[in-house]
Length: 206
Image 1 (spheres, one colour):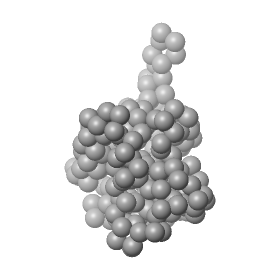
Image 2 (cartoon, rainbow, N blue to C red; image 1 turned 60 degrees about the horizontal axis):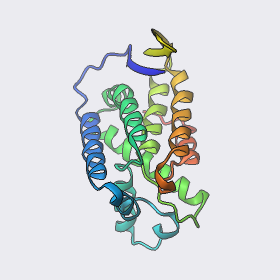
Image 3 (cartoon, rainbow, N blue to C red; image 1 turned 135 degrees about the vertical axis):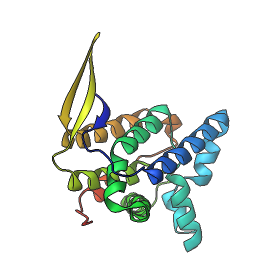
Image 4 (cartoon, one colour; image 1 turned 60 degrees about the vertical axis):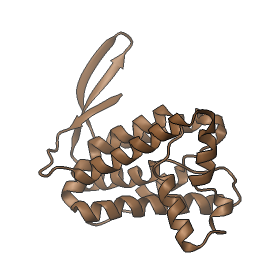
């Protein structure tokens, strides 16, 4: 099930959404260029719960930010960016550029901290934009509860394109994160599922 676009047109050019996708893309291409040394980058710039609170406040914010722009595989990266592209522009359009950027970063930080507190002794680094994008998806479903998404559904050798209620994509995206975790590289990255739930459960008012 591959989302193609939603039925909510944006009134303004989504510059913040595009910049976030660009930064994630550049970071991912750099990761790929490292080859077998990618894991070193993940351990250096991902969030390792057992080490996080050993850093000063500035170091904590820095590493939580860098972790949001790293990914553990092509599926992890492409899935996150696709959903951010389809749903982020509308949330940015409604919130405004500055508030959307703050919303994206803050929900990412909340997701990271939720994961850290769920297993503070873990030495497995957390990376990925999943927590922040969970916040964007949560914002989208609150702001546009009746939206529909044009969806490509491959069924064996047949391809069907239909409109599906956007709400279904919350469950599908969450399933995608489970698959990402299952096939993560060398076990060196973690996707914060408790964190995603922590971000999605509150109903922010914008």
